[in-house]
Amino acid sequence: MSDEFYMTISIPTDDEGYILLLCEHCGTFFKATPSDIEDDGVLRIFCPSCGLTSENYFTEDVIDLALRMIKNTANDKLYAVFKKLERYNKRNNTIKFKVGKRIKHETEDPIRSGIEALEVANFPCCRRTAKIKPLLKMTGAYCPFCGVKNYEIE
Ligand SMILES: [Zn+2]
Ligand SMILES: [Zn+2]
Image (cartoon, rainbow, N blue to C red; front, side, top):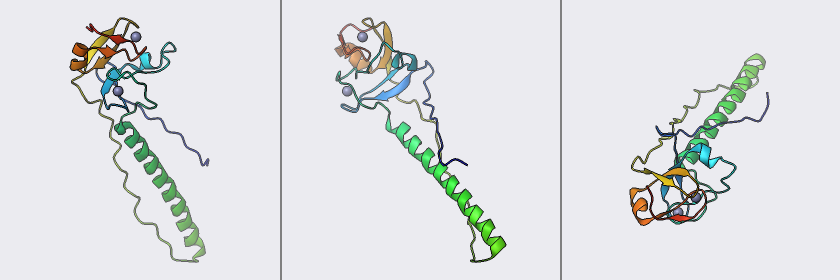
């Protein structure tokens, strides 16, 4: 048995295939499609509201889920180790040792793709789309893919 384990966390998209992102500078939520985010032509993602780039756009939901998954996996591993010890002890009868109930898993809720009030905006500079707050469409928004400010956004 290896001591390492790997985990994949899938971030669900909304019905139109956008995932939720959060600017760490101004707390603005926006959405973009994974294909645009992962495109080689897109080096970094800019916040449509403040125009800055964040180190990390994952929302707390995603981080929270990751931590919970790690905890659950760790608890399972510990449980398996203690069970083994228990069996060993039964055979050798050295010390009284009984493993209690398995620790209940914390729920691993699918991350809600939430914040449905965002509207699709077309950024002609990159010919890509993102979902942003309707207010930003009126005031102008930075293109999440190149950081250029667009004023007339459809
Ligand atoms: Zn921002
Ligand atoms: Zn652009």
